[in-house]
Length: 503
Image (cartoon, rainbow, N blue to C red; front, side):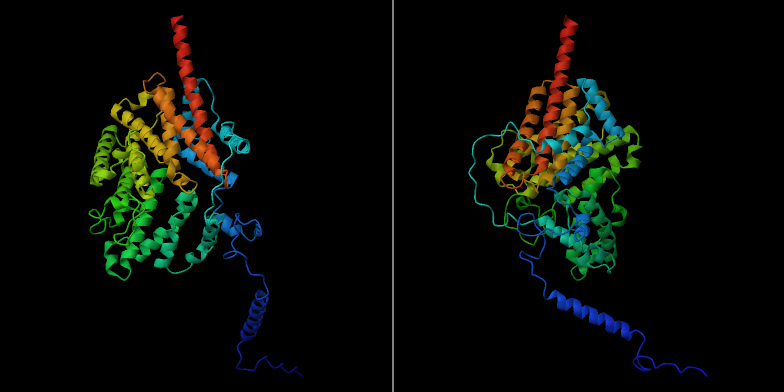
């Protein structure tokens, strides 16, 4: 006799998943009820900030996702890792690379001193806790603190970036593209920017923002502006790291917006109230186009294999195009106006950060153009086929450092990573010129210029101790002073050889 089948829960009309859904609803209700009894955060949105000592820091396991996206650039180890990467990109090369070997061999040959860059940089973290003997013993008056001194912008950015994975599984949208376009370059997180661009570029293509015709659609002008913003970031990273860009110019409409050139007034350089029309981009769109050409024609794998005559022609054409861009700026905003030691200080005070960046970008791109004349700058002979580029290359390094000394008010921990490549590349290239030509007439002047940079960042490091010390200021000071000592050693070695030959 068969056993009767027990009646199913809920009757015949009830689905098999109803009971599971009922259990889930009960669990959700239980969680919501428990959440009502949780203590509310005391500050903001509950994001931990090191500026609030009474606020409990979240456990590493709870914050692991956000930390993986963005670490605190003011942390000592994080700051040293970022600084080490910047140094490797300014002509020193990374550990074990051929470029590093060329740099170290050039230093050893000209100074008879072996400079272990890795060991030196590693020692900076230990030296960071010691007091600089150059520090003044005078008491300083503590000024009133800004209203948002204790706010931690990095903590909020980490919280935002923790939502990035959700965007990866959503359909492409302008909102997603806008969130991905958030540029973290000023914070020094270049790897994070590279990852974000790898997501933002396909979204841009999917939305059609790379085509000029998108402006006829709803919110099309905003989409097109996002394209130019992402395009500029992509080309900046490409030329910075000598890597292929994500955008292929062949697939893009690269005509600037209507009336863009006519709208480039001195409002783009000086501190003025901003308006939404015309749109003011972080950099000049034409500068982004020139960056793309510099990488394609001079630093890509294909261009490096070209004959010398073709590369020299590209250098001259790009130099002319960059000069034409400078000529289109208002006369009062030309970089040359600010690049002399006789320029009054008050002319720099009205410059906006965008104006400062445009000037530095101009000189840095001019330097990159003429720096392509030689793939190895360890000796003057490497420039033999185009001496004019050698002089321009070293002169632009001097101008960048002189300009940086004149904009002391623009240097702080927020802007350091924006200018880090300009600073370190100019310092290293001028140092290499000093040890290669220690008998040059400009040796003492160039040495004083490097000493001014070291003093500048020593002063910034000293001032940052009043709030929260920013380690990269200290790193830049020590690195520059080390190069100054090596340059003096190169001069001493030449003088010793001359005395020995005369004796």
